[in-house]
Structures are given as C-alpha cells and as structure tokens.
Amino acid sequence: MVDENTVRLRGHHLLCLLTYKGLGYSPEFVAGMTATAARLVAGATAVIVEGPDDICEPLCRAEDHPHCHEATVPERDRRALSLVSSLLGRPLKSGDRLAFDEELRARLRSAYRDGAFEAACALCEWQPLCRDIAAEGYKGTLFRSARDPV
Image (cartoon, rainbow, N blue to C red):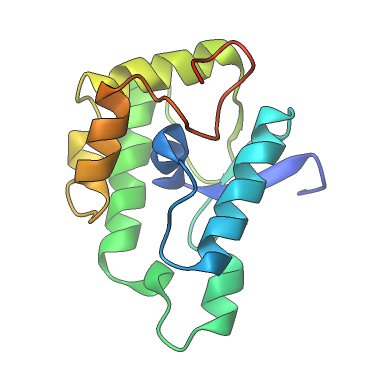
C-alpha cells in the first residue's frame, strides 16, 4: 500500500534524484521531482514501481505524447534497477521498498561518480549534465541532507 509516507519511484529515477538540481523536461516535471526529493529527504520510503511514478505520472495524464512512454524509458528503468541491485548486493524489483538514509545516498552517489551507472544513463539526454554535477561533488542538488555539501 502507498500512503503519504511512501513515494512511488521508477527505476531510473533512483539515479536521477542523485544529481537533481531543479532542471527537467517541463515545469510540471520539475515540480514533481522537487516534491519527491523533498519527501524522500524528509524520511518518506520509496516503493519501486514499473511505469509512471509520482514524478512523471501527472505528466503522463496531461500530455499527448509524454516522455515517460518513450521506448527507451523502461530500458533505463531495467538497467538502473540491475545496477543498483548489484551495488546493494540484493535484487531490487517492483514492489520493493528503499529508505534513502545518508549511508545509502552516499553509496549511490559514490558509485554514480565512479561511473557504475553509465549503462543505465547511456540513453538519457541529461547524462552529460549529471556527470558534471557528480564530478563537482553534487553541490546544489536537492536530494541531500543537512550533512551533504551545499
């Protein structure tokens, strides 16, 4: 069951959150991503879903040809879940829950910076920007705690 303390999150958005600085495909996407990052930082748990999540579902309902239904998106989800599963040492699939504490966020960011998730991001137009953000230490990102760099 999904409640106000749970965020529905698709596979590749696990990675997008790491470098998110308030940029996106549209104002609606930015609003969804910003709200999701804030909820997770405040302690909400993520439940992995297939298809549109709390970030992109409103766009999928409002747009005629939403980005979330492009053929490359489910492939990015699959690749991201596979790579994050390898990092965690356990399978990660739809219905599984994650709590993004500082340790998990740090592990994911370190792996991202070191290129562990390149295959998941290879089909994404934002990859060059995200790579630069990671290389600069994730400064200015919104998915951070008080202990992370500003």
